[in-house]
Image (cartoon, rainbow, N blue to C red; front, top):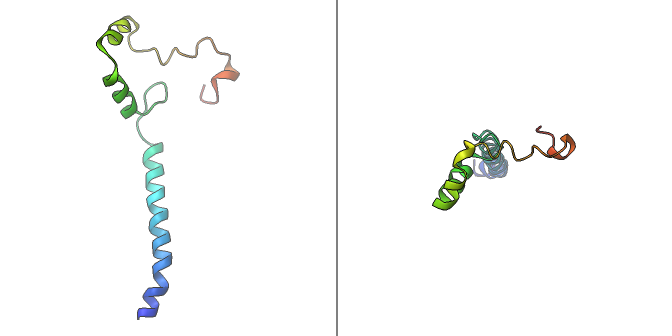
Length: 82
């Protein structure tokens, strides 16, 4: 029985690592994103890091700066997501 278990350990380790990688990849790809493509957690951390002076200067835009960032670019420069 010991030789059977020792033969099954390497494939079990490989399968565990593969499954962990797939779960990590799926969580990253399926994470909620903002309108400009950044993960929501990154946008929250960035918003909390801004100073009060920065927050007051963008109050008139309605929070859509990221969506308008590429208006002047041609479609070739915007990339495949546009």
